[in-house]
Length: 225
Image 1 (cartoon, rainbow, N blue to C red):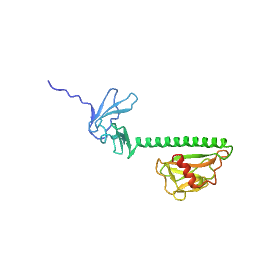
Image 2 (image 1 turned 90 degrees about the horizontal axis):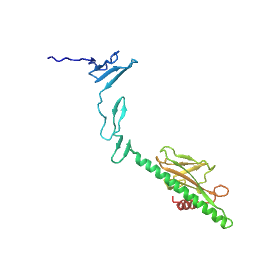
Image 3 (image 1 turned 90 degrees about the vertical axis):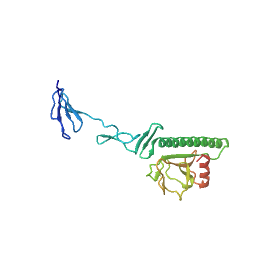
Image 4 (image 1 turned 45 degrees about the vertical axis):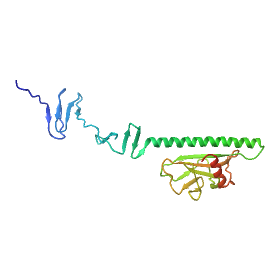
């Protein structure tokens, strides 16, 4: 008994696509490894061979000009749950930003508590001036070096405390002031927390013009900077 060969409409030329197929008819391009069929609307579609994932172990797959590929700059380690993008550990970056936010929140709470205590002491003492620290902060972009406050018309250098990640900066050494802005000599790095605190009168909201830089630093230390 002889074998019967069933042969589909086919091509052995690279990139060859059938012009039209009947309903239920198949065609194969054995060079490209594609099987073609036509929908009732006349659209030509294919079943294609799957060459498997691209790249190396842990590398995340992405569409690379129609082909699955991987790259060492984009990986995921399931054992540690670490996603790495171009050398940036996303998990660490998120944790760092979260810790910065928590730190800023704690400092704000400390300032509120200190302001309330000062206000109470002024009332109990029957006079004097209570003060508080007005605080504004930014997360560094790695590019921006000039920062402007919203609430202050003028920043008085001796009456303000500027910190980078909680480290006190010295006017004239690390930055200069101009109107309601400060300009750093060295641009703060990415994700650095930049904070400007100005000491203000509790009643009037006006900055104290006579506070020395050492008093401002001492006040910042009292807040935990």
